[in-house]
Each structure stands twice: as structure tokens, then as C-alpha cells.
Image (cartoon, helix red, strand yellow):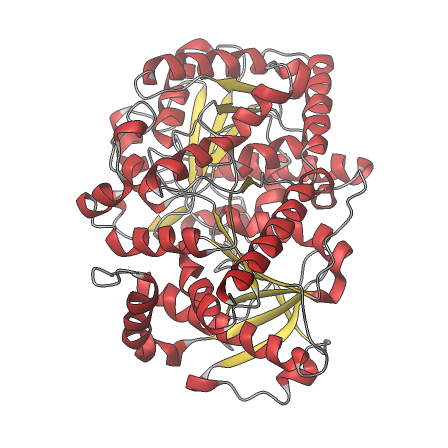
Length: 557
């Protein structure tokens, strides 16, 4: 589908996850970048945090000459702000400015005072990562202001947009609103801080949503400052967006503002290997997964073992990790003809890779002797306090008997973890099925990534992606490669049973059925390509510019 882009002279997008792989927003931006770069070329500039050092360099950033050189070589930024310019090493190679914001911490109290005075942002109760987020977004906004002024001095700029993602960049949006009102602003919440916190504190969200007051819940959950910043940034933006209809309802109730538009998350097929390379990559992934599981458990695992996984942020209830573990436990008694190996690819508080496991893999001398604690690949800080390990112990899932094995991989899979040494996508392609049984999932990138690699997935009706499936296709593996399980506040056991039944079905499919389901999955993922979903962002750009124009016109009367 051809998309007619809005004429923009500059398009900035700021996020903590630019060149900084932390969670799903990294995937949103890094896959969207190719399509936006095609439309806007060097007018697209991402702004991210420079959290790297000489000892630990960013694997995602290439420092090089760009059209920003004329700015970067002449600019003198306040407060000791330092910048590096280059490109993001992803398809499209978009321009990036990484901002070193260390010196801005000491300016935070002054910033808090100004934002209270101008907008009513309550930073009094701030703690944790609030100060870091505000220092970064303050610096990012100053950089945007400086680039804007630099190019404006050469030629007046009329259509400039600054897009800010999540509450962590809210201070930057408000700074621009007060200092450079000619820049149109967009604010996207990928998940409200209060909605996530309600769920994370084991409170029911969906059935009780009409009864919640966002400000009241922020006080109860000690989230006043993050909520205040997020809410005010949304209200002050020229265009407020979120990623799904599920989260739009949440925003309307908890932030007292209905989003101007829903901008669902797409994906780029250029991350997926083609044909012969696909077959090779899948074979390599399966071999590595079976090797690690076999060495860890001290067992010879069949090549046709049914490999399943869940992945994502370590939010035990929100991401449905609790359900996944209970599902795996039920499979022990249901599947008799095939071994099942369930991987939990969820980054935890990791200390280091297990040296005994690494040595055993390298030397292949362990024979059929299980290593100690044969359920985990890396050492954890405070392993005794880890929810996944505690639940595995409660369920007696210790990999010593039965057809089902569980392998907990508590690290980021960036290719240098010491055990797999492959990135997430290079392992994902090897699985037979994935499960994302989320309770709180504004969109759901992990199931979309899964089907893009032809791996059938199970998700829930509480995810934005799940809702998209339910409204666009038939909810059957054979039709779309996805099975959406109905989930609510109080049907935990039913969800466990339904997911278990779906996995049992997949484990019993023959090669012809598997191929049909895999092709259906890939076809569905193609329908969620950014070439289709970017139109929602184009609409958001138009809304932002129109509202900017109305705002300026009303201020000049």
C-alpha cells in the first residue's frame, strides 16, 4: 500500500530505547525506522541516551559523518551536555544523536520547579529511575531545540515534529512546549505506568477499570510523580497516541484523556532470513537449544523434541510467566509420545553465565550426568528470591524425570551471553511454538515476532495483538498461525487448561499440518507490516501539525 507522507522538514523521535535494547519499544522503533527512513530519509533523527563507555560500546550505534556534522561541529550545548552523532545500525540506517546527560542530574531540582510552575507536574514524590529519565529527556529536548535553531537559521522551518515515547521522555516534551512552541509534539504511551502497576500489584484491572481513578491509584501505589508526568505530557502534547484499543480505554480512564489515534505496532520482514537461509538458521537454532538443554540436564534429547518458549520482560504476572509454568506442569501428564522442552527466555538479575555449563558445552565431557541445578543457564543474584525458580521448585519441575524439561535463560540474548552466543531472533526461529499468556500487554510484540518467523503462537485476548487477531482473522492455527485464548480477571485455571490443550494439539501435528500453520503465521505477520501500519503515524503527524497550528493561532489572538 502506498502511503503519502506528510511534508516534514524534520522528524525527531526520542526514547530511552534508541540504540539501547531494553524491551519491546526497541523493537517498535528499530523496525519502524526502515519505513520512516524510506519516507523521510535524513529528515528523520532519533535521539537516545549515551549510556555507553569505552569498555562497553554500543553494538547498535555507528559513529560517522552525517548531515548533522555542520551542527555538531559548531554547537556549544549548556550544562556540559555531550553528544555523538551517527547512524543506528539497523535496516534504514537512520540518523541518531546519543546524548550524554550526566551533568544534568544537578539541574533536576530546578527543572522540577519549572515544570511544576508551568504545567503542574508533581515531582515531589520522585524516586528510582525518575531522576535519570528526566535528566535524559531534558538533555534530549535541548539537543532538539539546538538542531531546530541551527537549521532554522539557514531556512525557516514550518513543519517539524518531535515524537516522545513513554513517561520517561515526558519532561523533554514539556520543555519543548515551553521553549519552542513552533515544534509540534506527539506523545505515545506504550503502557500506562498506573495500569502496569495495578496489574503488577496483583489487583484486577479490566473488570474494575471503570471504578479506578488514576490520581487516587497513583497515591495508593506510590506512583505520583511518574503518573503526574505521564498524564500531563499526554494532555500537553499536540497528538496523544497509544498502541491498541485495549490501552486506549485504559488511558481514557486512568489518564483522563482519550488518545487522538491508536498507532498499532508493525514489524519488518527484513529481520527474517529467506528460504534456504531460513532452513539453515532453523536447523542451527534447534541444534543449539537441544545441545544446551541436553548438557544441562545430562540427557540425550531427541531431535524431534517439541520446543516451546515464552519470553519478554520479567513481569511475573503481567506477562503470564506464572501461567506458562503451570501449563508446562500440566503437559507432564498429557504428552506421552514426544519430549517437550520449555524455555523461559526472560532476563533476570543475572550475575554471570554458568562456567560449569560453558565448560561442559565446550568440552562435551559431561556424558549423561546432569549438572547441579539443571534448570537454569546463568547464575543469578539472589537466586533464592527469584519467582521463577521458586515456582519450579513448588511444582517439582527439576528436569530429573518425565517427558517435560524446563530451561530458564535469565539473560539478554544479544549474541554474547556466554552460553548460547546467539541473539534472540537466531534462537526464536528454532522453536515449534511460543506462548505469551499475558495479563497486561498493551500490544504484544513477542507473538508478532514469533509468527514472522513462522512459529505458531498462543496469546490472550487481553493483549492488543490478540485483539487485532480477533478482529481481522479467524482464531485458528490453520487460518492465521495464532490461537487467542480468552483471559479475564478471574479465569486463571481455564486459561491454563486451554493453553495446555492448544500446545498438545500442536505437538501432535504432522509435517504437512505444521507447514500449513507456519505459512499461515507468516502470512498473518505480513499483514502487520509497517508498510500498512505506518499510515497511522502519518495520520498522527497530520493531527499534531493541525493542533500545533490551532495552538499557535489561539496564543496570538
